[in-house]
Length: 229
Image 1: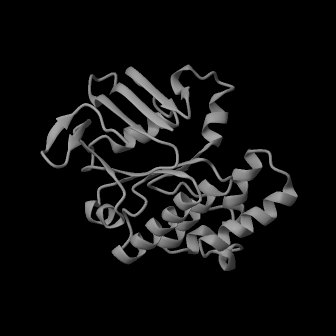
Image 2 (image 1 turned 90 degrees about the vertical axis):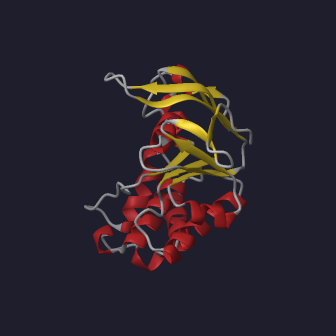
């Protein structure tokens, strides 16, 4: 599902956010992407949905070289990826319902289907009773669940999340991780970036660990060149 082949991300200043990163994640897997702040986790996620382009190397998503996609093909790639941002990126001038429905509207779904699918998705994350409220009235955990609902309402085959539990307490963090676990059980490929190693370890899912833009072997603290699935 995701392949990085010797990927380097270099900015005009010369700073290398990623250096020769290689790994592969199979379809239907659940991985954590761990490391300290600034380790390169967000850069990896941005390359997957081509918010950034590699300076060197190749990024493959669902069999497609993302750098070779045309302007018309790029939206097709992104429709197959549910992205949960660290700062939620909710629309605070719209209701909870509308925040989720807009994802289906942009994808061109029939209005009749949108109503039922949005309600089911909000039910799954425990927000159906709040659907007419403004997101600003929700707690941090509820806003995170809303962001997950919006990212998954179209049932994308791949979901990636940047620090989805970063601003939550441990109990709520476990609840959010459980939501991703349910998606995984339904066949979704999941990649979650987090600095919370303990929370990641509790799940038993494998971790890709980064340090200063490179992959790290957590057993030896040595820089490695490839992570096998």
